[in-house]
Length: 209
Image (cartoon, rainbow, N blue to C red):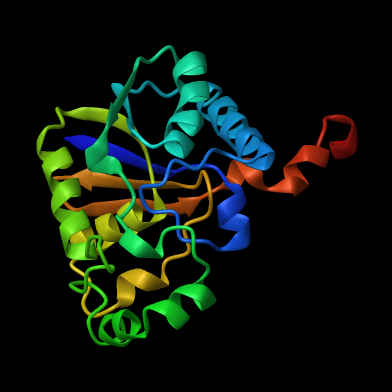
């Protein structure tokens, strides 16, 4: 059995500005660095053992994975197979800017969001083939996989055999955990970001007495 923990990278400034990132090497924001460390602390205290740690080779994913590597004592293995979808000439643009420059793409993507490639880039179907190639190389065990929102949505579509554009409706917060079992195709959790819940910061033994 192979249990895959899919983790979205931490926040970047472009996430906040709602800019398409794609394959551009955008670093984590200060908030994203904090998210990465909170994630690593949570997993290091979990008592669970992990077989391996993989990451997209893009900077925002690697910077999220590095605290996990340090606290869990796992070597970090990077691969371009886990990259976000290549958005081509949309990279760096906001949604409004992209729609103004590439109206034909958005028209076609509205009709077929899975198979329509970004201008000069990839389609979600092509991203999914990359992800499947990565899965095929995994050995049995519990693996941490730091990647991107588009990759996680593609994984959920494949595992759940979702029809239409249902895969687009998943909210995947930064550093959230989505757990799946392969080859059974079972989903254990989706978008678990309990380590970012601020109410937990105020709890202490004193407050519970």
